[in-house]
Length: 431
Image (cartoon, rainbow, N blue to C red):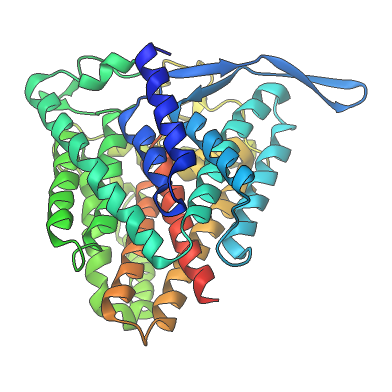
């Protein structure tokens, strides 16, 4: 790491320890939003014993700034003796079971030690972020503060991404991990800010849109500015995917007016999908290939990937697989063994088979269930509070839709576990 990055880490880590619990997410999200994964340290390789006669070589572990801040947050929690809001609930236990299976499945891969390192990284990020936000958010007011912080932090990123698009220069490149000159596709500059890909940057703008809209009643000026920032991030990333995610966000927020009829809406969606399967020559999920908002879309790749995964189901259904290169006509430059798994659900399938996918989907389902129950039980509260909870569910819906076309592989993962933890904490306060 550079001297600046080291100083940045020390300041944010100190803030993470010193700030009151309600504001503790601030330095964690500052590290997420303003530092690239290029600034990191590596720990290992090292060895550890599984049983007395079996030694596994593990490492090195890659610790970018956001991972180091998770470690600082966990240290704070242990030293201060901070605990979850309420009791352990269904989502908390599902996170633990999901993590356990990810670890177990690593033992069935060709290189168990390498697989174990990868799974430990996934679990560390997911559970570390989830349980930290779960502890920091003890009430709905704490969750509102979390959304407030998110809105404020995204504004400078949107400004940088706008200038990046205008000048074809990424200011965050000084930290490494991102290119100085942004990607250009179809004559369009695709801004990415501090994130590892322009699509991930745009996705962050889309999934945060509902979190900022829900501040409208209490912080109207900030909410309006934050909404503009999210839309600017989506526009400057130059990708169809985040635009579709933003449309999903707006649609989910709009359904607030029809919240009493969601069972009917879900049945309409299921029947609509069945109808598409009947009238289309290809499976209904190939509708992704026909969506091209700005040109140069890779929707066909995403649809074909789903079809290939079904075709090769026997290779990965139980514990995942170490080789997917034959699934698609093109591979990826960073691995000779894999295709580009641009689907977060299938990514978990490659990691740990169908059990890991189903457990992850169960976590999402539990989140939607908590939102529905919390909105129903809050009928005696002001409508603004109920809409706030609905907006959290809208953000989760955007994540669930986006997972069909994007795999999160950088600090953007913080935002899915932030959303899940916020929903879980609100539900814990109502039970």
